[in-house]
Amino acid sequence: MSNQKYDTTPTGATQETRLRIINAAYKVLAEKGYEATTLKEISKAADAAPGLVHYYFGGKDQLLIEVLKAVSERYKQMPEQLTESIDPSNLLSVVLQFPIDLITTEPEWYRLRHELFALGLHNALMAPKVRELLTEGRESIANSIKNTLGETTLEPTVLATLLLAFFDGLALQKIMDPNLDVSAFADVLAQILHSFALKNEKGKH
Image (cartoon, rainbow, N blue to C red):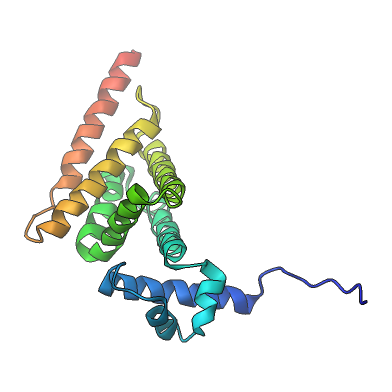
């Protein structure tokens, strides 16, 4: 019998196929919703053999998680890039405006998040994945807070948890009521957080 060992490291072709499936899944899921979407439709949109979707992701639940993780990673990099190019005096408002803009420009992103939340509530196997995604979201926001507010008397993770709940809750209201105007919320939040930071600075002296 041969002692040949096979390299199981993902190849470039494998990574490209996975990415193509994830991108196709995002488009189909956003258009049709989680319940109405089939793996066959995703395979067709990705121009991939139907078995590959199941092979790489195991099923629609895990694929939805991978889609949201991939998009989250892309969005997470935006505030980090903003800190390098925006006037510090306007940075907080700009960073807060970014997720609020997504509510209007890419509501499908938040719609898929809420579908995942619903799955986590009713599926014990999905709940840990939902917690992981929320944890990563809090960590990303906490890092943005540290970069814009600096040290505060309140833990950045606490502020991040409040802001994440705010963004997701505001998005749900906007999805259910498309006429809701969310344009002014970033400035209001920035004023609140700036006031908190100023009180914190005065308390140090």
